[in-house]
Image (cartoon, rainbow, N blue to C red; front, side):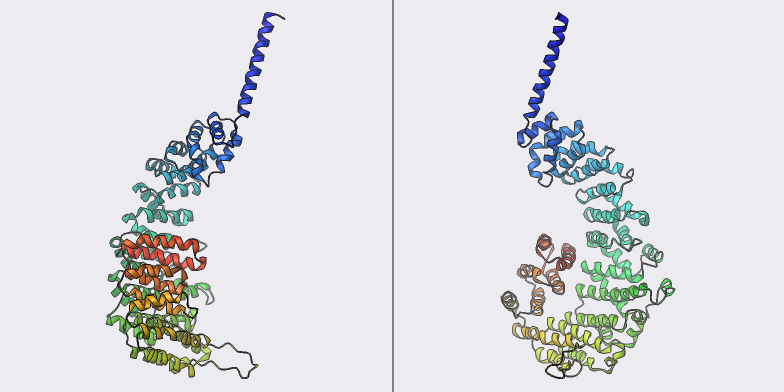
Length: 591
């Protein structure tokens, strides 16, 4: 063999040996150990086995900490696993990874941009957020835009607030719905006073399939300071916002003035805006007939839009009453006069609601107006026990006899709610006056016929519910007789009720209602502990009681309660609890 050939042979041998050594070294890397996994990432070997290990830690970011430096270098140098690596870094949320997120912003791969946005939500890097905003308009995928916007839910940035506002000021009919709701969520966190009028309009947007951003946009509005939010809300309630009125007029198929009044009243209630009392009484006291919207009049009688509008008319008036109740109208004689007329369902109020009543049935609107008027009169102590008995006896009138128009049903529905509200607001001595007056109606007006014979089937009767409610609420009236104005008695009864199978929900609510007027903050926690045991009806009273007793110092307590209930409460009841508690946060923040 020549020297030349021996040289070649030697070189080949050395190459094979080197490859064999490298292969052996690679095979020695064990990605199942921390040391081996770090070595694999740093040497870029066995990545096909190392990356799945890292991806498996995404839901356990603490386990990923030892690998973050190697992952950052791997991503900044680039590999065929860039998507997986940036996703892992985003889940880890370590600020040292910002250099990787900054690179991802410039990626042509939209999924890497999304991960950059997710990552900085935890690292709170405003500079990278601004770079994301710079590329926002160039994105054609709304999911990328949504991810960029969502960084504004965790990072305070005036530029982000302006971007969210710009989205809501654009053509909403051509804007992806997810961007509208996300923009509202962003503004709820940014709390930019400049967005108030934009939010006022966005609340009323509806898509072609009826979706509305009313909840997130209302949350954003309620996140603003009371001094900022109340003036435009009151202007809207009084239908004096010309821009909003024009927007309503341009969308006659989905919006009416009642839509505006309804949403505005609910928000004003949460702010406890006393300046809204007289305008709200103006609205309730106005007995002019509510006209049918022009576009609706063109629709056939069976069109669902008729029923929707009629229901909204009743709901708008009901929301105003609830708002007045939350704000408080004790000693307001004007309110008493108007509410008594509504309860008596005078000719003027029959005329006011006649168009809406035709579309929703005789009983629906009438019952809601009358029982809610009674509720306000009782809860604001605008009527005495004697006046209450007179209202109960008014149910004996002949106006409730026509079965063809469901008048017996109307009387039973009104009586059921009346006895409930009377029980919760009961005073000492009213068992023998108010409750006895209700019970006396069971002989005739609320009579439930007995089966004709021992083997006869019990037939359903319109008065079944009210007769049962009268019997069930007697214990609540008796509770007022026993405790009188002694708040320790109500607190003890509430505590003892947990071990008493005969303790009714109405007694529980009565105790909470009374404790809310105690003025003693020590009962705040007592009521919070009851929240999980309450149905939707009880939650309303608990929320009102907590609003009376609490202050802005209690906001964190309510937010913690909300989180706890989200984990432990029946989801049907929690959906209502969530709305009540979020609204309570607004009220307490502004006290």
